[in-house]
Image (tube, rainbow, N blue to C red; front, side):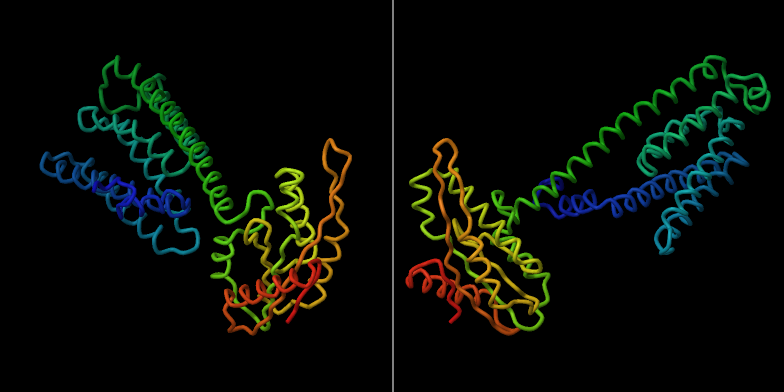
Length: 355
């Protein structure tokens, strides 16, 4: 199994990071600090053996600062990441200005400036990275294209390099900007679709009530306080409505009954249990018997007009009610309320059975 297979541990960990903005930013910072710090450490070692003088101290200082930035981001709880970000931008700008002016070694170090747009987009986002990158481009233009700037250079760059390098850097910036825009839009769309998937996986699309899976997940997060109550609501003769008037009318009946239920229960969990069945769970001790009768009476008042026929259809419900203490399992209460709902059916429908 490859590391990028969906079932691999690495893939799951990477998915968790990508979908959590705060965690993703931290991992990106640590990754860039580690990468640039390691490169600077290697370059420091090379500079020592090649006797590059000041350049050795510059690369050593940057490697050390990368480690310090990592500790700031990791251990300063309040705005540690913001502080290390600001310091990192200043450190990069200072080092790159030194590379431009000194030209060490042999004009090569200035090429590292092309990494700034990509690293900036990765770490700081589009706005801050664009400001930083364009600021560096103006610095390049000043040193490479103006007489005053050229007079400050300590290295004799070739005329071709002086003229073309700012254009090359600008191309890197525009490419990095385009890729970050695509990534940003893609990330936002994925986040939207993820939330939509989570909602749809836990809710019924017709009524927007919880489905069974959604109720099961909600139950994990709810602390039962005091007496619990469960209503098991079944629409009377629902199959006959579907067979006589069609499923579109049946859907309208179900949606209308769901809206009536919602108006009577503010702090309960409402679930479409089956085709025409609705379960209402009161986990907070705020249940009272009148709620079931109020729902039944208001549903009975519904008159749904059938499009194109001039006819209308009335609706009634049968409701079973069960209560229990905080230790009573929800599944047990639902089963008991279901049994009482069938007792209401057997007794003539359009009624509530409590015991």
